[in-house]
Image (cartoon, rainbow, N blue to C red):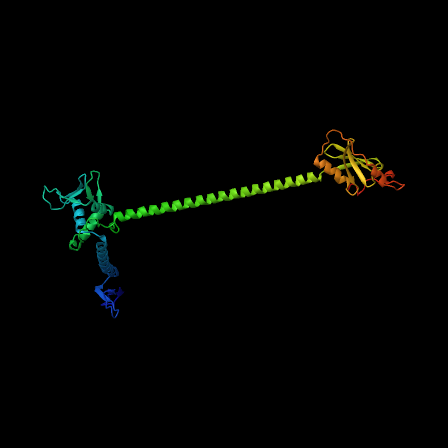
Length: 353
């Protein structure tokens, strides 16, 4: 739309259309005469655009209808079945007689009993949403069925032949944009939502189970570590008990070659006596309450020997006198000084650390 040159002082408004112009040169065409007011020109331009849009809508609707007919899969038998279910003819109809479906087509005589229709055909049309069965068992048409009848009403000559017995298709496509298609979309949406909910629940349950398994694994590992630590502590304690590492000894001198040893926490008292009369000078013996325990060479420390007795928990039975020195031992020492007659030294690092 553009203003034209003024005539006698008046400006005229013209409407141009590119679609109506020359498609080779690209020159638009003028629509109608000039308009003295701009609003009139706007209205004329809008009306002309609506005409073009209406043509486009009619073309689109025609192509959509043609595509629907090509993909509907309808046959002459299906058309007659849906047309009879519209009840436009008071003598026609489709009903269930107890054993199967019967159809009285439109235009039949008053007393016509109709003919039997294969159950599979009726089930296909029912599943596609073109027919429905009411509470009395009669089959009536739906809005989708009426719309499909209008599409095929002027093109009945293009309908396919009836399907041979036991060669019916698996399903008929519903009317595009119809109620059955909308119901199926809603059902698919609900199934997708249910699937998403199930996936979320499954994922949450899997995470919960994994967290529970991890917690159980950590608890088992912690318990295993505690058991290992307890076993290690028990072994360490047993080793210290076996070696007497935790035993404290208190030494008290009785005489030059005799000491009394008390084991702290064991309430036991031992006497350690170095050889000063009857034995070789490099020997010492351990007694408890005048009962003989053991005799050792000086190379073995007395402290370790006493700790070992306390750690082993040796308990004396009936009092048993200690062994007496043999005569040959006395004869071994020929020195006039006689080592057993010498005053033995006090237990030092050699005898008890």
